[in-house]
Length: 352
Image (cartoon, rainbow, N blue to C red; front, side, top):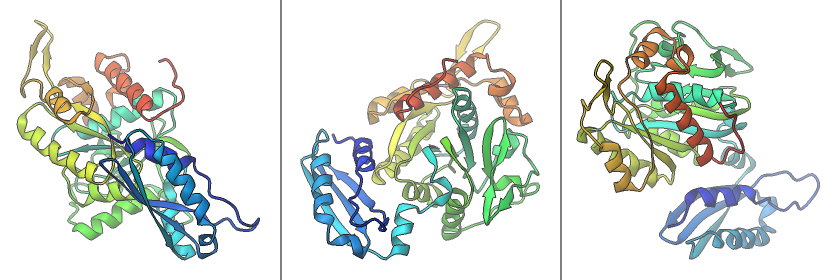
């Protein structure tokens, strides 16, 4: 099986040839797809570069052919104007300096996805990373509540929005400037447009990780993220019961069709530990995440219990990673953060 992540890594290492000192038009790799052993992609160039693309095409074929499992490489060369080329190489200028985008997804609502996103972001920050948190759940943005940012409005500078700083995180959400219970009643095209705006028109600056809290389901927002950020890493959250697993399977299918890299699974609400007797009560069943991991070949990164302090922290704007960093569940988030760093090829992390 061809490692999609390795294909992207190879392409990022290739530097296009310069044909004259004043020519700095970039080269864009797009439409990257893997089917069995065949890798196909499009190389888009300006008209000035097309005449010398033979050497680059041969280099791309040679390096991709060296990836384990690749048996054939199909390349299409496409000539575009400078504006189209700029869009292909920097479609979302706000995240140009973001090293890794980690999108937290789920097949259905109510699985605690936002709690996972918030506390994972804080764990990665504690591990020495520069971290941003984007609340892309445009239907029910709850990150502002969990971080105590209700009523806080982001500022703008030179047509770019500036994220709000909280707990050493750069944070952006529509919920920060929407009062009370106002509902977002948007259809597909507007949803996609707003997601791209949150990604591209926010001045995220230099970040090691941008954590994106996706809306539940497999609709327009998730597809927009998949298309906008080809190199995003996806973490999928589920709960043990079968109804949740069925929806998660559909989410996995969506991201795999978009050739996205799924880092792994997280099982939330796995059990409740009754403190007085230390009895483990499996309210939502047993072993759903492990079962799905074996079925899909995706690693199970963590199984989080039902934790009352975790819930309270989400309600009062003081996440448990901030209020009780030495709690058992926080150690689980730290372990998950380390796994994310290892799987996204972070060079080092602080031993915390």
